[in-house]
Amino acid sequence: MRNGVLLALLMLSASLAGCTGASDDGGDAEVVDLKVYYDETVGVVEQTWRNGQQTGSQSVTLTFDFARVTSTDDPLVAFFVLPGDGRDEIVTDANQTASIEVEYATHGLYALTYGARTESGVEASEEITVRIDLRIDWQDTGTTNPDDASIRVMTDGTQGAERVEVSSTVANIGNVGGILGRAVSATWELLDGSDGLRATGTAQIADGQEETWEGSSGPAEADDGDWVLRITLDTDDEQVTVTSIIDVLHAEAESPARPFTSEQSEVDEI
Image (cartoon, one colour):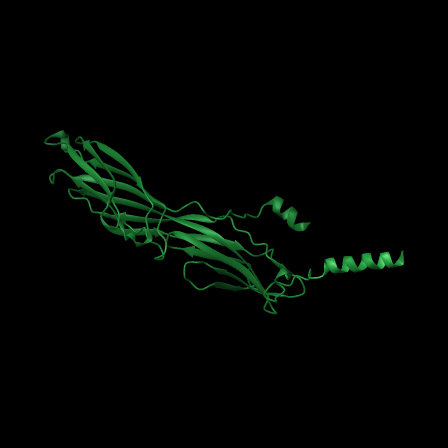
């Protein structure tokens, strides 16, 4: 009976061997409980263009909350985020702040890494995918020859976009009193970086009226170069106003968001 008890104790001891938190690289990474929270993993960079000039740009800021990251018997000294777009990692002192904001000014799919480091050099990290799309708000006012809208589909030189979507309205500015006004024919062309025609449409627009064309094409390869939305008119004596919304969209491959909720708080307390 005694031998049986000893054998059972040895088997139990063997089954617990290795459960010390040691990682494959020799560090005790498992001493760090990497509970990081973030509300979003997707965003849209917005650009505003008026009469051929960029007048505004709105970047995307993602916030990562490290407040609930813990470490056993090894004090935390740093939190970090590697944005995945070629920039160096963003590092903060764990004793000073527990939040890191990451700003993106260009669109793309990015492999972002966040993590924590301890006083003895142990590091725990996790990689997620972030999706940043691009929206161009383009307007050309009172023109007889609309400017081409340039669309930068390439991001970091290694990836393009899944598709480009366009919603474009041409308004034929009405003549005063309707005198001498005439219809104008507008042709929309969505061209890739090799001048290949990806989508097109034509509309006859009466004086004082407007027409909208919607087009979409993809994928946009990284080596395509800039795409172009070109609008041509059949006359140069009628003024029009062009309003276009152009979306450069990536595959919906982003990682799920991890917001901190009251339910999550109850889980963390267990």
